[in-house]
Length: 352
Image 1: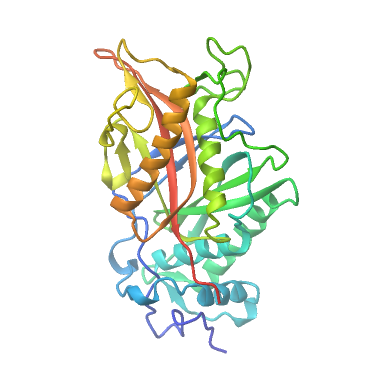
Image 2 (image 1 turned 90 degrees about the horizontal axis):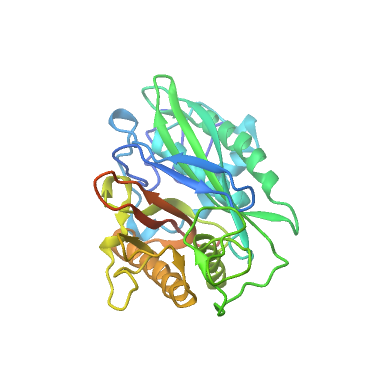
């Protein structure tokens, strides 16, 4: 019996057009993501996309780009029924896209409000050949990864927010890195205002980030801003999952091939340090954020998230962010302190 996966996959004698191209990155970039629940660090790498015979060649038309759900459902059904598979092949990009889309479809829920979040990662080696990736191997990868990620969906405890899959080509196939964010802390009410004692250190982790004159222990400014933004994104009610996920990161310098933009790219009048998101250096730099500065940089980080979307991925929607206080040590110049915010964007598929 010939395996069928929507309009995209047919018998191996036919070369299937792939899903929309996604995640173009020219070199490796490492991003530290600090898990709020465990205060542990994970490094994720955005890798080179496939070139040559495994690269996609026939993109989906613009009018069809949001009608993904039927073929995602077909892929999941195929993964659940191994006897229906045959020798069909996918390009490496298409295999990555289907695995990521199916993991989001099967696990992600962006409608639940939460107050704490973390990012974990998995790795998987996907065998590949010069002509591409076997559909059966892609289905196997989804099944194995789905079993592990599904464990984070625990009723009234935690849920998966979004899944991002990146790849690195090897001599024997493709190494997949799967980053997935989980939300928790449903029993807490998010504080939507900053009080007179809300003076918080810019970052650093831990649970004692207070700074003068604040006498109270608590999470740092970076995670408070992260929490505020993510809860607002939930309130927007985008949908239950996304596909074609990509991420952009605020850094001290801009490097567009790796989707890094400098906080200095977004100046604004009235800012404590001249920029929308937190970033400063030199004698006038104060890493203890006052209540008014907390309010300004919460709004400013939100604004940068939307400006990045408008500039670099206007067809996608923001769904999740991770904010980490970071610093760059300079021997012959002033150290730089900034909020290293990473924003995740994706496409919301049309419901059936």
